[in-house]
Amino acid sequence: MSFRSLVTPLRTPALRVVLQVLVSVTSAHLACAEDFDAARVYEQEVQPLLEKHCYNCHGNGAREGALALDRFKTPAAANSDPELWWQVLKNLRAGVMPPASSSTLSPEEMERITSWIKFGPFGIDPAKPDPGPITVRRLNREEY
Image (cartoon, rainbow, N blue to C red; front, side):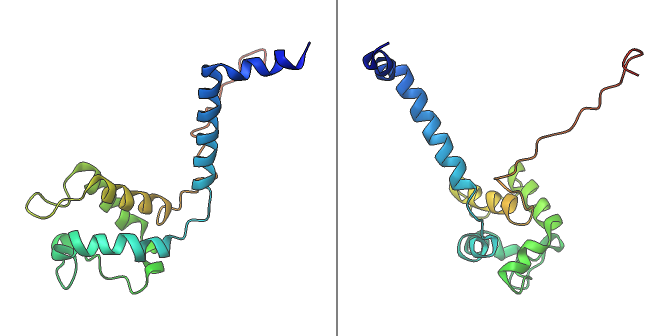
């Protein structure tokens, strides 16, 4: 077996595509696995979006729906109420908020807010994904 016979399969376009996909998936996974500083992301990315799109009704003294998004004293305190952010996430996904009469979120802004909710208040660790439910199997007569 010669060296050329080992190198030749690497020249096929299909294998190159597979290798490129593998490298990109691996790099994307490593990028997600980096430390996620939820307080910094909230302060620099999410809070300005909330001020722009949500504080008219849910901030600056307004509490429509008994919800005030400006009540958090520090960015770290915003992570402490996952139940509140679950309601916000449900309303954003359903398209209920922001209402049609106010300014709408772009898809990029929506993604920024929802990803912060998932990785910040919900505490989802991209390095350790949930494996899903465990199915318990019943033993049959012979396995007892």
